[in-house]
Length: 180
Image (cartoon, rainbow, N blue to C red; front, side):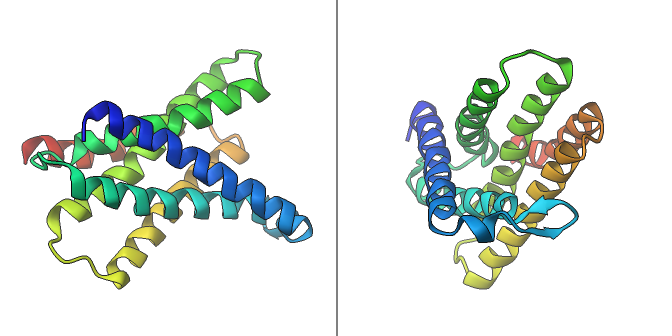
């Protein structure tokens, strides 16, 4: 698959996650409006769940079709960028007034999706046989990282600090990916 195709599959995956979130809100609106802990709604947790599970499923399918698997990081960048573009675009539509804090949140959206996909890609690159248990643990890790990101954004904890933290975390798979 070309980098452009991977980018567009990332876009389609984001729309798939959006579809799942909308469908769930139609089917069970009263459940999704409950606050589970802190004032975080269960809808937010469902959104993270849908995004991460679909990213793992579709990225795995793409990863198997990539001819040159010498660098696991590049497919994660393109898939994650495609996914993030949809979220950024939808955020801009709902909040068209530009503020610097939003800009850093958008950078954070880009980085969080590239980061979780880098983790998934790193696993797929180094595993010949994929086990359900390890995929489940990988999903939990991606879910947790994404939850921390949303927690920072939801409570408006310095978007600059969040972007710097995500960029630092992203350097680890980037360094490994470009060295392999």
